[in-house]
Amino acid sequence: MEFVPQSLNEYAFSHIDSIPTLLRQMFEAVSYLHSHDIVHGDLNPGNVRVRASGVIALVDFGLSRVSSGEPNPKTISNLNPRFAAPVWRTRLG
Image 1: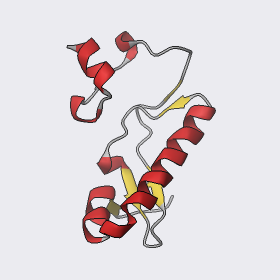
Image 2: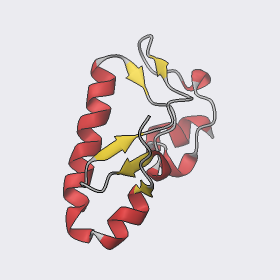
Image 3: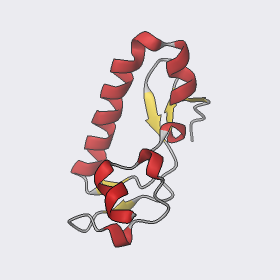
């Protein structure tokens, strides 16, 4: 297993110009997961790591799951409102 020491926040603060590229990589990675019906479950800046080459790695799949269809707020656990979509924040309280 590869160790990727730098978090998204740490890298982005010292590489401001690379933020659009990092975001595109994140969108592509999440799109890839979703195309295979995988939900990460804990996507936040700490779980997006950046290699020295500037390529991201999504980590910590401990809360990931295979999607069984439409999202259901009752099946979401450990949702951090800071990183949740607005629709989930209003539904969950």
